[in-house]
Image (tube, rainbow, N blue to C red; front, top):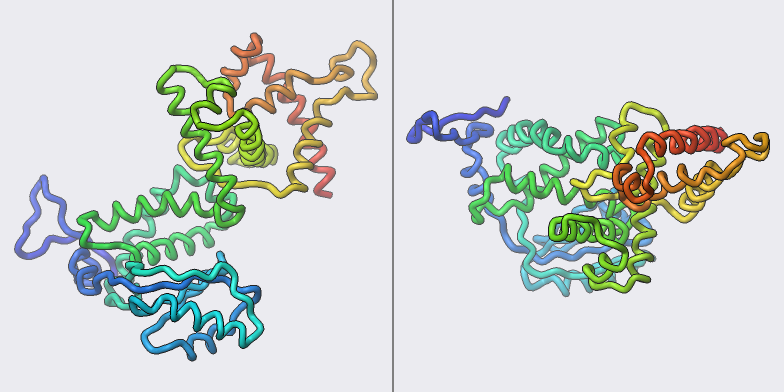
Length: 365
């Protein structure tokens, strides 16, 4: 069964009217109206080891459902309104009786959701088939971000299908917003959440705030802010800004480091994309590795003869990599600041790249 864009009998299409979407023989708006979104109390929690989910479900009180997000390790238990705290106490006691410790258990009242499985099967199947390719097309501009977490196309397709079902569960047809527009907005948020879930919210949110602040300052003053100006603009001390900038540096550094593999996407991730939220942070060991690799790549070659360029520290190469990787600047901006040509910067940066490739190849053996 395939989805189709059709006209309802009493609303013929004309050149300026968009025909309603019909899935499984049911108009899209009518399908959502058949299973309206309702309010439920929800309990979120994690545990220190996997729950026996079948047993847990079997012993839940009547009218209560549970879902488990394996990627996040998060359990969600939904029950009638007014029962959130009772459910939280029941879950805590049930887990304690099986030597499980709950983590971050909290009750949330009045969560508005629908169960996708309650929609007509043919309607849901056609809806997902229709929005799957549209969602993939919508996510093309975020692909460098997505590939860091979902390099396999099959994994990406599976994730998009899950996102569509998640949007179906959250979509409130009474708000007057088309489902397609709601889905597009949620996809942008959920792409950002890939990094937040994998590496913690602080790093991704810090870079997002800094990027927005820099963009706003530039729009207002037609130039990039100095460190002190940016700190004042964000309402932070210079020390706090510098601390946060180290987090941002790590995020950008990872993208630049990954571009050294010479793959087809190397040019895409060489410089951070200002239109999408950064989403990756390395652990402490990887930060140290990157720092040492860059420093070593710019150090004098002890085997080079006196007077040769390799016998001198590659200061311009180091500055080029540092300022474009950690400072978030373009080569044009760095060229103006350092009063040198972009061509000269590229020559020195290429020397760094060659040494970095060799060092990373040695480490991977």
